[in-house]
Image (cartoon, rainbow, N blue to C red; front, side):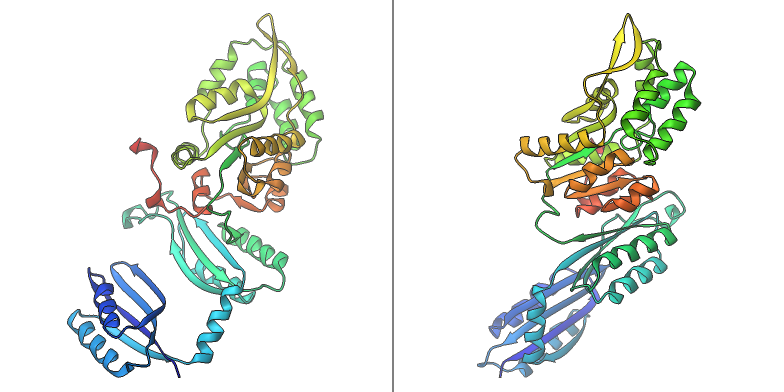
Length: 408
């Protein structure tokens, strides 16, 4: 009969606790079957599952650990584990694993209760909960902070579609974002991020800004809104909007580019992606003049967008070459993945409009960012409450792993 023991220690975090217990176990030639440690607000919780060899007995092991734990001011509990129970636990490792990421300005007890209720309701077991966001001072809790908690769960949900729908409904009711992903080899191995530009990388629709300068702002904005919501064919709506810009002076392009506001978190996200070795691309139904401006400002690797036709210093109301619509974006994404010699699973696509759905659907991680309802409901993941830098949480990075733009 194998003797298996679960040892649980808790108390004030201090150097040397784990090594002290491990040294005692080493004296008895114990085998470590599992180990886990977490520190919450300087309070240590350590769990070690060990097999005591036949030549030894658990009694002296327990006695020595009790004495050492007392000396360190730690509380300790011991629980014998039967072979059947251990065998059942081992067999659980074959089950699929999932990552649930909660994103909010602040994480409340209600949020955790609601998310974990959905998880358990679909017969998933939570193995680990980790805070990804940094520590927030008490006097900053009322500000526009950001918070993220990641849950690792395993199991075989009976209905994945229903599970995703439950998370989407919960996110809407609580004004949070909830990402649900399979925990596979690709999650931390993405290599290319493709961005829509207007209302994604920037908080503006450039064609609307051009229309304001041309005195047709209201007309163009109405068409843009309908197109992004999927109510109008993109190419048709684009042609209609472009025609209204005929005669606009070329000089306004530089003025508009200089005032384009970056989306929250855009600069931090791209800066960290570059540090991590990712390639980045703009795939936009907007205009390459502004895409190249952002390329220089942020350090984007690739830019594909519509080329404004200009004659005699005036915008003609047409574009040169094929219009970059949703289908074209998906084609470009595939071509870039092939050029970088990576699979589509290693691509992240981010956009807000209906014309982004084709590229969002084929990317390994498709993210609707502050998107229209149709896009949000159709995309694999969505971010509405936080900025673009929340994407770093979805690929598993903590705040402490990343670099802020202020520290450049």
